[in-house]
Image (cartoon, rainbow, N blue to C red; front, side):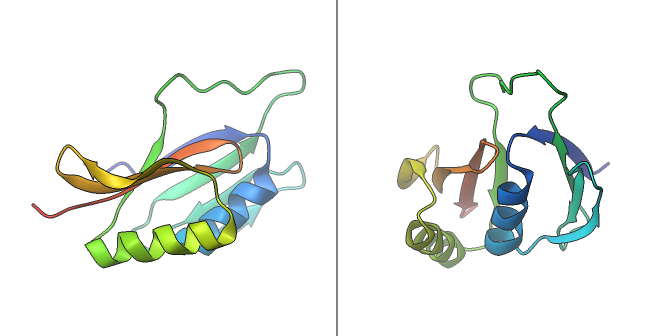
Amino acid sequence: MKLNHIDLPVVDITGARHFFETHFGMRCVFAREDGLTVLLDEGGLALTLSPLPQGEELKYPTGFHAGFNLSSEGEVLEVHQRMLAAGIPIVRPLGDLAGALTFHCLAPGPILIEVAWRSQ
């Protein structure tokens, strides 16, 4: 069984869409007038970015994040450099975490993102 859909409420749908398209190659397949946007990745994951209901405050639980496991150390380094150059906030620097090369950044939304590669 494979997880193939997730819906994330975000404050900045346009910024989040741009982030996922630019840094992870996702493509928009649907966008509604109210902002609801569906992005697809090359593996078939559908990421829906949805607007918050009026008057509701966004609050993900502590530690909540989305993760991208890349296929090589070089890919992690390239994404890290690209995000630094784009001014994406890096909230956990590039380094080893439990045997994985990883870093955490903040996507517009705001959404905590982990980017990692594990050699084994």
